[in-house]
Length: 59
Image 1 (tube, rainbow, N blue to C red):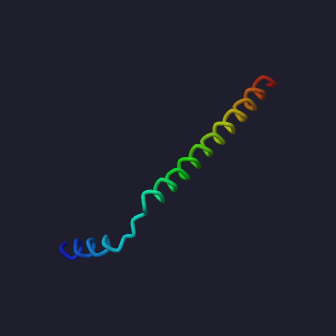
Image 2: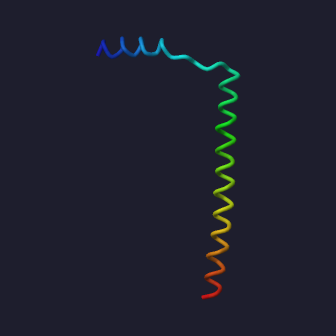
Image 3: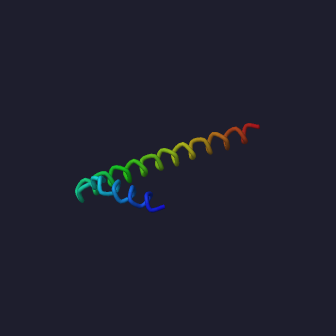
């Protein structure tokens, strides 16, 4: 168990943490992509919902 923690500490010292500017930039990109995908999925849902409603009306 002690070896695990020694390895953990050794590996965590090798981590290169991003700068604040880089972190904010990358976070903004991820949030923007999530919002874009959500908008696309909502749009597809609305289109498919209207299509299904139209099919139900025709039947």
